[in-house]
Length: 207
Image (cartoon, rainbow, N blue to C red; front, side, top):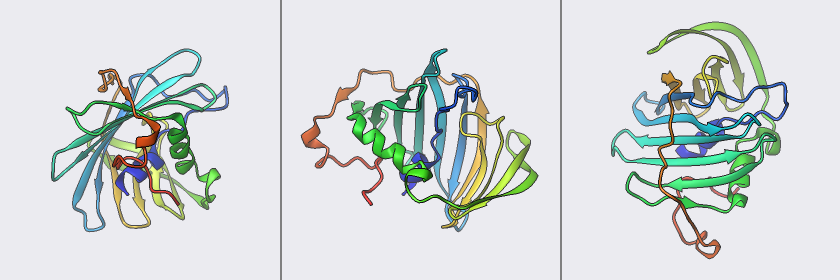
């Protein structure tokens, strides 16, 4: 569930040419707490590569607050928003695995509400949110999936805070402009016949 929420939150690349993609190097980190307020996960979204043509390489880092174990997800998109590469690294010392792009498309559809069930979203005006990096003016919203607050100043996600309908809370912890790739080793392509047998907790369950 955590990784699915992570992917649903993952930055969606701009398709319209007048909308600028997030800056290369931008990152934002978050804590994820359960309904009781207990911190469960630490997440970091970053843009670690790209070009003038709008291409972007994103990395998502997830760490378990109790176990201290981490995992990395990297994906690349072109200027039209099409995913062209997907790499998973289930641990610091684990070898990176390259998945078929078809798996990436499934994730892309999972985090695009228009391709599943369109959520009803209502804006609720401007508010000020106090975070560890200062007080941030943001635009609040409420939808079927929860409520939150967003700001274009917080790249690459725009998210300042969010509370899901299940009571899980995402809160901004830090941000910056110095992100570099953390997946640095060459990825091995995972054979297609192993996709159904290898446990990849990063992928959302089939509907």
